[in-house]
Image (cartoon, rainbow, N blue to C red; front, side, top):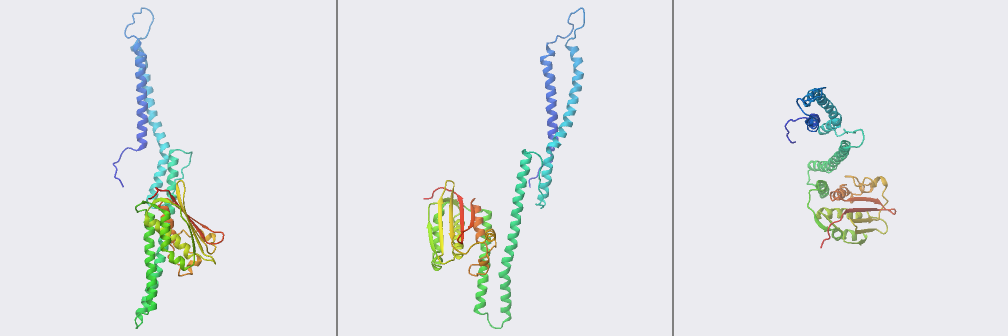
Length: 364
């Protein structure tokens, strides 16, 4: 926090400014009266023998006391009125400051909720409340994520510790079956840790960008997973159009690979299919990926993008269980590239994933 020397309050500055403004106005009025009125009145004895005609000095003596009293009254009114006006106009700032101090101390539930018509201060207060709403939602999400991550990491580690304790009590060396279980658990913990690091990297947006073609990333991911696609007898329909965008090669490749792997392992039916389509629009590029499979309930669809959320079929299928971070990572990567990821259930079963990213320069 920047250190600042103690200075005058805004209320006092406003009051002094109002006071000096009226003082300057009163003095200017006296100067105008002198320059454009009294200076043209002769001074001294006007040479008249009868009657009384006031000269310049007479007018000044008669006028100046009243002018001085009026000016003093005006200046006192400026001080009092300026102070009251300043307090009234700056009262919302005190309310904003009080909420800011409370938030700085950790109370994210406070809001300004400034009443009154729309003006500069009310727009500031509304923007601050909106920022606090987003911050509160982000903090709640991070707390849920930390709790889920701790739970997911604790499970394989606890099982590993139990298996090792049992093995230590056995006189004979560990069996091959035990070693395989430990290897699986260790792999799961490593995968989860790497997924957490990747998710944190995407959320922090700490990556370099370059111009690339999303359709080429789809081709690379498809080529890598082609053996898995052929093993499951999945028909792949790929309609590729150039889709130039700007982003991080590794993260966007991870995004495409995650969606493709999800479409492969959650495919099903008598005629399994995957449809992939990339397209170029006026200001964006899109990647559409659909797969056949079991119907996806609406309540499950709403949670698929949240960390550590898995459908019932995934929880009971060890081959497809994963760590529950795949689609959450895809969501974070998309957001980090100023894009949007939408999931919709297909009427005939399966899932449709639609990624929209800002359009970039065409690559060679």
